[in-house]
Image (cartoon, one colour):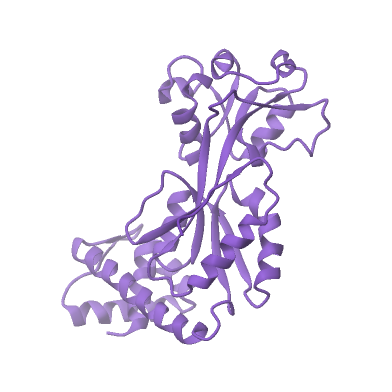
Length: 311
């Protein structure tokens, strides 16, 4: 049994396809297939069920793949300890953020981090919370930026800021004449939401139920208009299709003249979300977390409430 074989089986389990797994491992498919078969023969158990259309992990294979991921993570810890033992701020950092945070945080965060740690290149990506969590646990990402509630075994979190939700509406809308807008005033409006599966959609439904028309069941919400991203929804509001609730950092009307968009706050207590850093307990570069926290704190997010950490 070798580390290479463990990498191969975790790739097959992740991709559910030998060809894609081989591409991810930068080897030919025959090379990967022979190695996987060799490991199965050595262990005396089938790890995968193969058909012409798909590959599935056997019940025994699931446990072995899970353990292989732990082994590979520990190996990565050893490698990083050796590589960064003298200076934890040298070498790349792989950072992920949810889609409703990344576009509004990264433009300030990247130059801030470069100033604080110039020898630490930053690789960034945006995705759903579930995808980022999987990549974090598999060691494909070092740190992720997500929103609460968030709790995963083996993962540590650090509060960053609390972000209020605001109402974004066309400037010509009658409600734009008010300084603040109550949740119940939105119940009869055409509401624009992100599609199912997005955590911010769930946060709006949970923390701002009075913003939504009538019954908040999924059946009822299917009759609202959905967008694929916050930027798409903002364009839809500017075009007059309806109104929406956004995190304050995403609501800026700077791309449109004031004759198209208006931003209004909710009366206190306003619905909000808490944004946090998350990383594996075994991540061997604690100084990176400290510097990353400093870099986020320097970002120009004037509408948020910065959260103090213990100690």
